[in-house]
Amino acid sequence: MHRSDDIANLFSRFGGSVESYREIEPSYDYIEEVVAPYNLGLNTTPPMSEIPAPEPLAVSLDPQPTTLVAAEPLSVIASPSLVHAGSTPLSRLLVEIKQQRGGVSAELPVEPAVPRLKAKVIVVVSAKGGVGKSTLVAALACAIKRSGGRTLALDLDPQNALCLHLGGSEDWPGIAESDSADDSWQALIRKGFAGSRCLAYGVAGEPLRRALEQRLENDHLWLARQLARLALDEQDTVVIDTPPGATVYLAQALEIADVVLGVTLADAAAYTSLNQLDRLLAPYLQRENCAQYKVVINQLDTSRQFSLDLCEVLKKRTGHQLMGVIRQDHFISEALAYGRNPLAHTPSTRGCQDVLDLTGSLCELLMYGTQESSLS
Image (cartoon, rainbow, N blue to C red; front, top):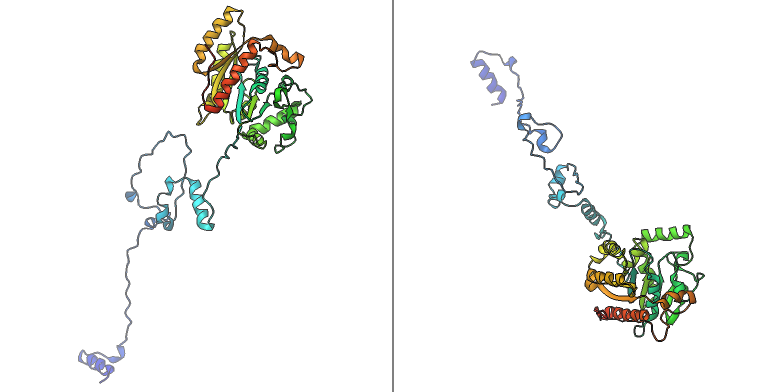
């Protein structure tokens, strides 16, 4: 029996006609619940009743700049490696991306290290001029005789006077006349009194001086590199004359100093100038492995009770920082006029002997880190 016969019999039983029979394909409409688009991280705004209450805004007093992080796509937010990206510096995240892309080194640029100098460096400083600083530098350059070593006197003062105290002339070429920052100073060194060597500042006009000072301002390791090229030995000593007060020359010298020697007078302005000098040197003397700071009272007039009293006040003021007292000696002050070694007088005058005592203390300090004080 066929399917059509069954249908005909069924219609006949109910009094119907087969001709009205039609087959209809079933069709079903299913209504599916649609997930709100905002749950997928899209921009569609959710109903107001479902919006969570905003959290209180945290106000920070940290002066560091705030980093704004843009909203990430869903695939990025779900990445485990970037879950805490908001707490990581942006620079570090960028470096990590470069590493993943091409194996770029993650090392950030570092400050260049100070070139290592084997020689010991003494920097002679003062808060104000007229304290006999250049004369003292020349005397120390003649007196310091470390075993097997040489002594180099370097003039960083635009007055260019140090070479005159060592038997030279203004015609000596100097560091200010160097055409390039990479020029070696070896050819500029001249012989001075008592086997000393001198690097003059040189005669420099205003444009040349400004160009040099701008170079020093932009490169705080300029002096360190220049001296490193001279290949000085461990027994060599460099004594640097600096201009009074805060200058770019002083900043360069303090970067490489082993001993900072402050020069003052026993006069009414001495107390104030020492306070100024302390403030000037403080940023450098607070560093790790900083230079040792010592003070010298120069040109003490022992014929005046006021000078002697003020000297005692300065001794108490400086304490263990006081390295020596140099009495007024006309032979030293007149040495420049006669073009002679300030320590060449025989027998030694009192001022010359004071300089020799100071030299001995300095050498002890450079060699052992201690000084043998000659002060009573």
